[in-house]
Every structure is written in structure tokens, then in C-alpha cells.
Image (cartoon, rainbow, N blue to C red; front, side, top):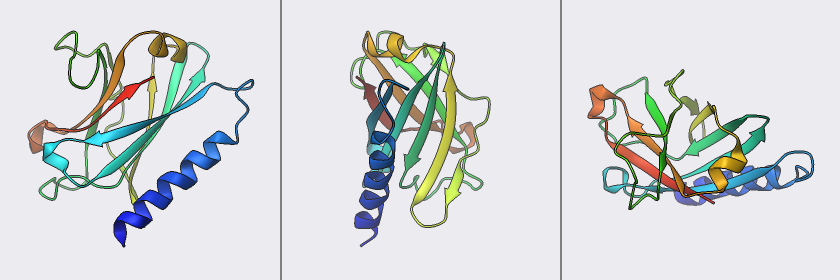
Length: 147
């Protein structure tokens, strides 16, 4: 039953975003795939063009059970895909704020900003990576490819 609720939350978020006019604001939804450290979880990042920056609203259904509370999620954008990154260092870090907000019914939400235009991210292979905090092993828990 919980999985259906998670999927419903993502569908509602995607529907709300799709109501925005593409002419007014460029918006793209990126499915986030859980890693081996976070099996069974789902996520989605909604990216929106905001001038020379990209704003992101991220929803994840859960984190590994051993993750300490409050939950710290570190967010990065890498050059390359989830399976083949071009560099070991991220192209952009979005860690001005790392605490995740608990959505009382469905999971965790994060709001992030990247100092890069969305068109730039869509013009080449980039991926969004979410990691647990250093206290939790700095484990990759989600990845999604920007298209």
C-alpha cells in the first residue's frame, strides 16, 4: 500500500508541474533511481529554468533505515550518466542546505538551486546524485539522468 501512496505523490507532483506553461518556464521531471543502498525506494527531481540558475524540487520516498535523524542529504550534479561519470568530482554541488524536510505522509522533500542554466544541463550528459551525509557513510542513494 505504501508504494501506491508514493507513486500517487509523484504522479500528483508531475501533474502540477505539467500545468506550468513551457513558454513561461522550462520544466523537466527526472526520475531518480535508488541505489543498492536504498533498494525499493523511488524519487523524482523537478528542474525549472530560473534565469542563469536551475531550481530543483526533489521528492524521495525514503532513505536507508540506518540513516541518522535528522536526515542529511547531499546533492550533486555530475558530468556523464549514472553508470559512466566523466569525472570523479561533481560539476556542481548544491549543499548550501543539507537537511531534508519530512513529508508527513509520503517521504522526504528537498529544494535546491544549481548555479547553471537548465539549458546547459540539458545540452550534454549530466546526472543528479543524492548521497547520505558523512556520518552515514556518504553513500549514494539515488541517481537520475538529466535529459
